[in-house]
Amino acid sequence: MKLKKTRKARNCYSCKSSISKGDLYGQKSIALGSKVNGQTETAEGMYTVVHQMRIPVDMCQVCLGVK
Ligand SMILES: [Zn+2]
Image (cartoon, rainbow, N blue to C red):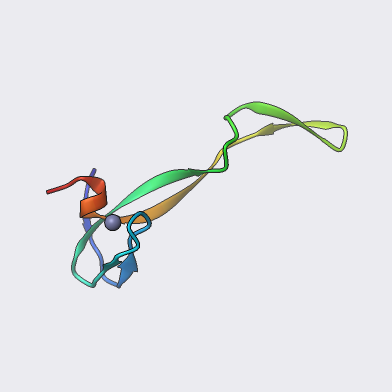
């Protein structure tokens, strides 16, 4: 995990603590929802392949386990 220096104040996604300007933080992508990649679902009679949504979130070094 590569840490970056933030140029603006952020909030840690995991512990909700604030990451102030100049502090190190990391970005992690998390999965939204519980669907499995490639799973098929019937929506209005049509088959669609469901892809898991992943979004990047900010995390502080403590939550990333970096010392
Ligand atoms: Zn945190």
